[in-house]
Length: 371
Ligand SMILES: [Zn+2]
Image (cartoon, rainbow, N blue to C red; front, side):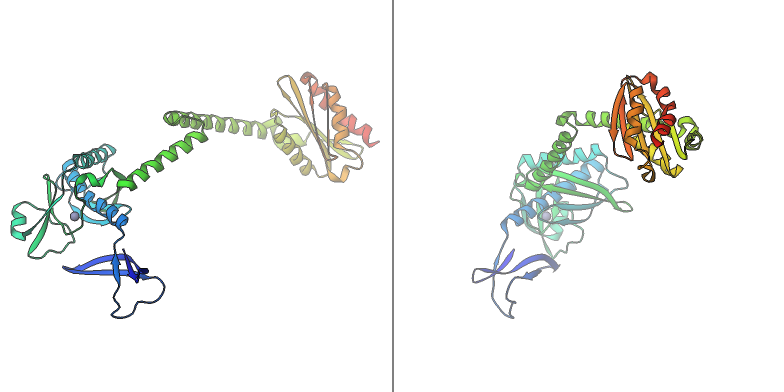
């Protein structure tokens, strides 16, 4: 809630505590001018937050009943925290609550909500309340007379909290999470009313966004994701296989380097690759060129009915021989053409059967160019 001074907000309540029976403490955040001693302010309840907190608080009673029904009477309340946005409920239970159990718990609570029974409170002497079988709530303090709450005949509890008028006011009850917090103690977080609707809507949006990303309908999403993960595994296998081929190609880089020829003082290397991928071929050519120092490197590969060629020349050699000139001459032999920068060029051709012949001619092509 809020504290008002002449209709203006002077402070907002951030926490409320009940350290003793009958004593309420409000912790506030001052807005604007400081509060003065003995100043009289008007208190105003934040009705929406209060309603939401009521829903959550009333739902903890139904949750307690549902836990005892589904898990057994050992599932006693160990503590709870109720705010306007969600509720937290700790209880004794030795193992994780299964998905099926959580669903049964939700169903039981929602069945009580839909029955829309009025929430009854009676002030009774504590002995009389005990005779009714009312359960005391952990952490609460009780006087000689107590408030007995009946939200469902299956569950009578002592409680001084503020409640919904009827169970239907709680609205949708949705469990958000379940987990262990200490040995033998579990925690459930849940939402009610509009917060539960907002949670479900959030899930819906997540599903829709994911479905859009993988181009599936909401219902097909799991199948589509399964297919994609299977495809990813296949591709990973394929990549691993390609990497192996690249590193093994002609017996490794060192074996490739042994095929280097000296042409009028220029190192020339022309090899065939099993990987017909322009990017990979360029990368390999640059790697080999840099390993050789100053060199001309040409790599050829067959891609189905096509031949692919990549040529690279060390920067220091480009005034003597240009990659574009090398590739033009070599590409002709595989029925193609190409070009590029002085240090990097590539070409395609329509006759991959002539690839080995073309690669074998690289040395003489370079020889003619450096003359
Ligand atoms: Zn209560």
